Length: 347
Image (tube, one colour):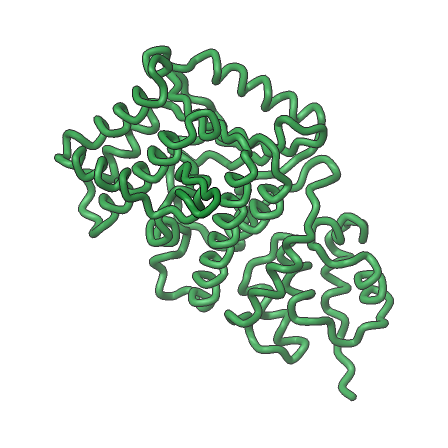
């Protein structure tokens, strides 16, 4: 039997983290990791290697290099289900976890949203969970890079993660979870203007449908999907998950004013998660500031006033009627999102 060099043990030891911490952040059991570092496992499972390295912020390319050392093929689409199963077991515990590279942010959003409870979101636009798949996948980093060796896997992996997050979202809606979103008016209008005036194929139609999907959910369940427009621009984009629970988590998204071409070696900080009480209170205080800056004109006759505002954003481009059509035919699955309730065979 071939004896493999214990490459993954070196990676674990070089991380400087305790096995218990790596177990929580990777979803791989402490027992398995203990056997691994003690040389009791000669050839770890492909999914185990990938999950540990993803939790430690390694790139897909770096993971494939290590897999080759264990005589495995590079990550491929059939590997995704096992990696996602491990990902569902991850826990956000132990103060702060930094995240590098976009894929690590996407991976951790799924187990965080799965914990449930009121979700507070502060961003420049509605939640990406209202986006058509084509729009979401088209705007991910490296989506248009043909020189990316693992582009096919990256795209499939991102697609699977987005599908899983949407399923979690639908389930949360069915359970009556509350979603509060705060959006800076200036950022929102700048975003719409930039997209609608750019010559980017069908992207304007996709963005139109994105906003129409959000409007449809707000109209159907205005108290469940509560969206505020602020006369204020926060420095940070962030999410608090479980704000009404005893164990809330905060997810800070590194706010980027500009896009730069980067390589994995540069290791840009994309964000972090935390369950630190002091960090939670810091972002709750910021949320109170956001709430105090809400545009009162859009509070009156909510949600009609907000939906009318969304529609007016697209009026200069002759798309306000199309917005209305899209809103009446949203491409969202899940009955609770649309306010359709089935009882005794009736709708």
